[in-house]
Amino acid sequence: MIFLFFAALIAAAFFVSSLLLLNYGRQLGLRYQKQEAGNMAGLTTVEGAVFALIGLLLAFTISGALQRFDDRRQLVIQEANAASTAHDRLALFEGNVARDLQNKLRDYVQARIDLYRMPHDYSLVNRTEFFSSDQQDKILTLKNNVWNTAVAACPQANFRPACGQVLPALANLFEVARLRLGAAEKHPPQVVYVMLFGLGLGG
Image (cartoon, rainbow, N blue to C red; front, side):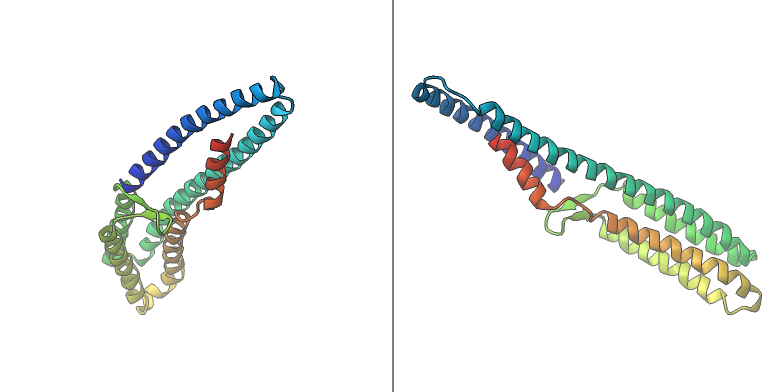
């Protein structure tokens, strides 16, 4: 919610500043025409250079945003596949242990889904998405519960062959979850936004 208000404030400030600078530029143009008797040679070249630079920066920014969106989407697919693989491999334990672990894994995955469905904000200080700390603590507890239960079952002789398949699958699932959190911190450098706003207002 804080980021929404901040974005609205920036948009309003840019709109008002644009109107003020448009009016100021018009006054400068009229004054210049009076002084130079209407000679505006070279203005088209300057306009073309400025707006070409704005278009180039805007294109790079949008291209980067699309790339980051596609990367996040791929991580969602990877996490879903990793969760499905881990769920299937937990069946190798057989019996009540397998069912118990699968139930705990489902609770973990559901908590992960709920995390991204919850309203979340953007931290301007840390430049990353701000998720519910309570939900993240719950996810960490469920994650440790699944992992510790699986590790505790491994010393049993009949479960040792399954551990070689189950533990790497769980580790991969948790690794992809960390990658998704890391992807939330990938944003364009602030200098790009400064240049965009500066060239936009200057243009």
